[in-house]
Structure formats: C-alpha cells, structure tokens
Length: 149
Image: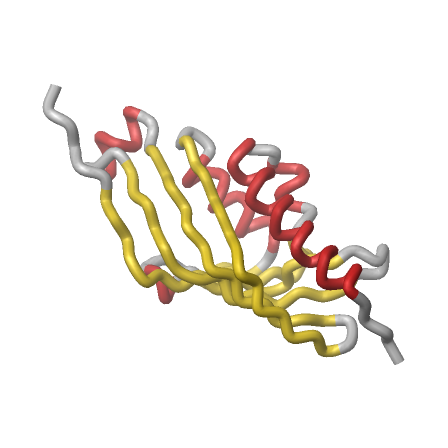
C-alpha cells in the first residue's frame, strides 16, 4: 500500500511550477521531463487538437510558442490521489505575445486566456511525479488588439 504524504502534494505542485517556468523560459529539456512518454495532450476543448505521445506534443508546443513571449500561471490545485497516481485541476491563466512574423500570420499580436488544466499525474519509477494526461479548457480568451502605428 502506498502511503501518501504532504510531500506528494508538494511534489505535484513543484512539477507544475517547473512546467510553467520551463515552458516560459523555453527550456525544452526540462519541459519535456515533466511529462511521461505516453502523454495524451488534449487542447480540443480550447479550440486546439489532441496529440498522443510526448515527443510529438513537445514538438507541436515548441513550434507554436518558441518565438513568442509567454507567461503561464496556475493556482488553486484540486488534487485527488489514487495511490501512485493523482487527478489534478488547476485554475490557469496564460498570456501569449506573438513574434512579428506570427502576428502577421495570425492577424493579432497575442492573447490572454483563462481556464483550467485537467491533468492526470503518475509517480514514475524514479519517484518523480509526471503528467500523463493533460486537457486544457478555456473560460475566456481575450485577444490582444492590433495597434495602429
């Protein structure tokens, strides 16, 4: 029987903190390490897509935001433990500011989104908690207006 402790709660919170910091600083090696290899990424409820597999998901995320300035914030985790796995809902906000080239292609300079991450974490063989499934839902999306220059 697995005994859960407050340190398990903190470890999951630290995994998500690393997720945000590594994504925003474009540290792709560290960002990759917060996920399991069999990751299921589902952004369809937020107007995106579903991707199976960590390598493909990281490649897609990286190509989308590498040239952008981003700021991801999460808070208020609701964690339900199931032995060596856990389901977590995070309230989230993300701000994306596109590069000049992306702005021209997308027709806007970026957005600020508000919603939730619904995630499933597993404790891996090395003892670290990683995200195995992630679904993004949005409540609001504020598209930044184009500026007249």
